Length: 266
View 1: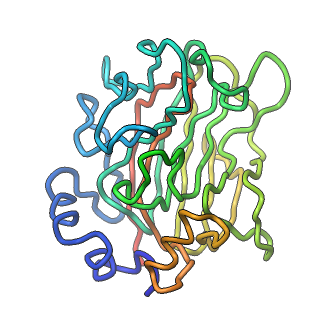
View 2 (view 1 turned 180 degrees about the vertical axis):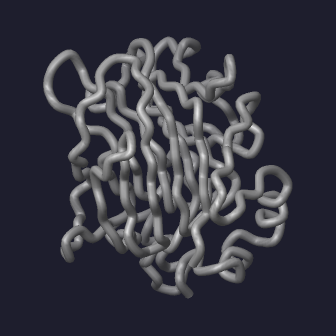
């Protein structure tokens, strides 16, 4: 069975109750942009933060203020590995995703150096209910958001692969991150990233309308323990034809003012 290959597979993997809940809030329609964020609250979203149970919003990390979805660390004294992810409740396979984000303020004390102005959106992610309580990142493909420092180049909309691999130019890519060719965006400016995903086919990253990265054949990495468990549960199938979307919390305060999706035809 291929992972997330149509509604029948979704019903088998997620269960009918999950599909029913997906009908209870936003229902995106093919060919139309639909906002996944209502500008008022976290309706339709659920958080999983390392060390906490699913649904526990540790130290109010994810919140909505002034019509903006925020990743905040003002209630942390020090970061102790509490990497977080905010999942939309419905999985997707073929779609365009458009996000406007910016970084604001200073990094949480205790955050690792690589996490400076570092956030992202996970696509083709495992179901949050299947994550271990102490799991740092879901098995997924990350569209990485990076903000530049005072000097040096730091492209955004790169790709990282926790528990997964991808193919570029016909070669299997097993390194964790691959840089895009985007410019560096410094300060607190808003940046628009768009992702075009075609199941286990081509995936494209755009920044402010410009194509900056392209790859294909996202797949589970059998060398990763969490991914290996998913492969076993899916009868040996490694191909990722879809999954969940999740915003990150990696010690960098960030804001999101637009999160939109357009499901595509098969």
